[in-house]
Structures are given as structure tokens and as C-alpha cells.
Length: 482
Image (cartoon, rainbow, N blue to C red; front, side):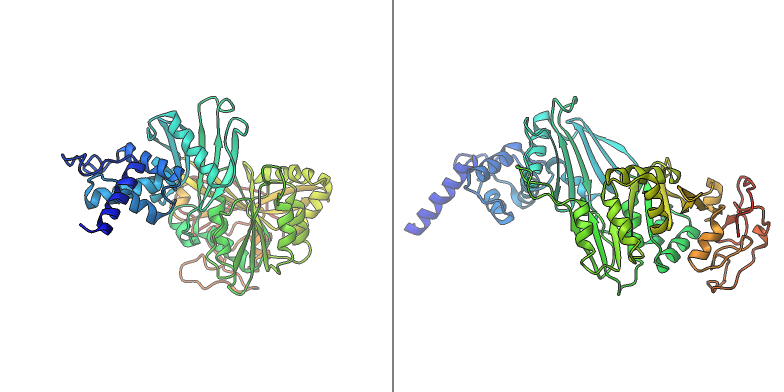
């Protein structure tokens, strides 16, 4: 044996000792304690973790692979790969939660305790049972994720929100949390859904998709409203994907979640302060910066504070086609929500009403039922009596029977909405392209649908079928203004 072989053998033994593993000589039985059943032994993961913390192993994928391979554990090829995946997940990923990232339908992971883990997504909120063994495991994961985001989580700072690549993490420690360590993880999915896919998935009726497409083509300013988890970001990304490829979209977000399929979309993300509170960049600052970036469309991912003043000011100075999302339980609640946000910026309610009515055109509201997420209405934001802000519905999601036929109901704001998107519809005509075989209606012309020809029925059904589909009778409504 050469001196080089001896040195190499000694190096491997030293590394095994640092990792807490056994050498082949001390494990003559060949006990493959890892990989035989596809599960991992926590001792190996813990040994690699200790080696990383001690500085004997670098925190890189290649170093992890080398550490696992030279640990002295007889794993076999499949067991080695399983071990490596587990080590990566424990040291750089979501640990026991890592496998949930592989499910594209999951958007949120909620950890209420070792045996109380929930996920939210396209299928709704569901419990998946026990994933962690102990409360200490949950806390260790929370501390590591927060540290990876450049902040600390401890008794002196027991509630923290951080952003990681593709993730937004919020963690709370006891005694602030009365149920142990709490973790809330929002997952940013790379996939962007088109409006067609959202129609196929039941998120919105086909006539609403056509109306929203026309809204984007006419560069109307809009807000997407809804409660938490209704799919506001998903719909906004789909809408922005419809923008002209020659347009420049500037996205302003607290946490980067929007990912429109568009060749010229750039994003700005707010920044928390450091431990001394310095270096803060909030959404208000970023909206001002975005206005210097020559945006064709300015988008605020979520209006939640004083930045609403800057956004409305931008929309009132020639920046058309912009939008954002806002938390509201109904479309009718959007004006009150805007007023509350404007108050944070020092705007009086009557000033906000004038600004918003001038700046914003459309409110698209999403709701959530047992059947899933759904666009419930499309309405116009208007000023009544020169001082009261209101949302007048134009299209309303119908009862289930009409949904199955792909229809929706026209409301009292339909005629004005059609005029804004350039359809020049009358109350007796459905939107352009909704009748079988018809081409989109040019401005100045109208397609008559005898099934909805009664001028008194402003809630008549607009459907791809050209007639009222089977379902419950629709209430009559007052004739909308011309």
C-alpha cells in the first residue's frame, strides 16, 4: 500500500468520525440502516447536520453527496439517493414537508403541531396527519427557515415573516402561539394558468373570460378582490399574460408571487429592515420607483396600505391597464376597503371616492365554495351622488344549473361595461362571440338573442349556447340605464 493510499484511507476515516458514522470494519454485518425500506435513519441526517455546523462539510449539494457516500453506512445505490434527498431536504429544503412541494395543486402548507398539518390548494383545505415526530422538530425547521431568510426566530423575536426562493414563510413561537410552534408556508408555483385553463377548471364562466379578455385589450384599470385563498394572484397572473407583448409590465409586491407569462414583465419586492430597523423599502416606496421605470402597466400585487394613494395617483396620470388585488369579502365591500386603506395614507373618504372612481374601471370578485374557487362577479366601480363609491355589477356568476351550461347573468351595469370594452351592446344582445358560429361583434353592431330580448330582464343569462340553459328561473330587474 502506498503512502498516498494510506493518507486517503486516513482522510476517509476522519470524515466518517466527524459525521458520526461507522467504518466498514466496525460494521461487519453490513447493516444497511438506511435505504433498505426507502426510509431514512435520523442518525445519519443528524450526523451530516452536525458536520455542516462544525464546518467540516460545506453546505452544498456536492458536499452532501460526498458526506453521505463516505459516511461508512452501507446504503446501496438506491439507499444513497434516498439518503441524499433526505439530507438535502433537512438541511436546505423543507425537511419532512419537502415532498409536499411535488404536488402542484398545493399552494399553502399549515403546520399547527407535530401531528396537525394541513394543506390548501385547488382541492380545498385538507388535513394530512402527522409528519413531525416532536414539537422540537417543528421548531427546528421554523428556526432554520427563518435564518435562511436572513432573520432570527427566538424568544426575543417570536413572530417572523421571511421570503425564500419560491416560498413565503411565517413562523410563530410559544407563548405567542398557544399551540406550540406554528408554520404557515405559501408556495409560489412556476406554472401560469391561462384563462382557458381557468374556464376548464371551473374558476370562471366562458362569457366572463371573454369579458375579461376584452377588458385587458381595452387597457381598463381593474382590481381583483376576494378573501384569502380565493385565487386572486392566480387570476391576476392569467390576466397579465394577455397583455400585448410589446408592453412593459412593472410588478410591485410585498412578496414576489405574480408570474405572468409575458416577455417584458419586471418585478420589485419590498424589503424588511435589518435587526436595527434600517433599510426598509415598503410598497409605497416601490410604487414611486416603478413610475420611473417607464411602465406601460403598473401592477400592485396586493393593496394593503398607504400605497393605494400612489397607485391611484399613477392611474390618474395616464398609466392605463394597471391593476392589483385587494382583500374583500364581497365586491360591494371593496369601496369600504379602499376607504380604510386610503385613511392610512391620510386621504379623506370623499377624496378617495373621487380618485378611485376616476382611476379604476372594473372590480373582479372571487369567492370560494365547496365546489372550489370561482369568479363571482364583474362590476364597475362608480361614483354615486358625486361622493359615494359603489360597485355596480355587470356580470354575475349564476346558479349551478347555469354554470354547467357555461352561462352567467347580466346585471344592471352590463350595458355600460359593454360600452367600455367597445362592444356597444344593447340590453337585448349578448356579448360578442357568444352565439354559436358568430364572429366577434364589431363596434356599432349588435347580435340579437331572442332568448334574452326582454328589456326588463337585465339579469338575463348570457351563455355560449345562445339561449337560457336549464336551471332555476331568474329574477326580473329594473331596466338598466342607457
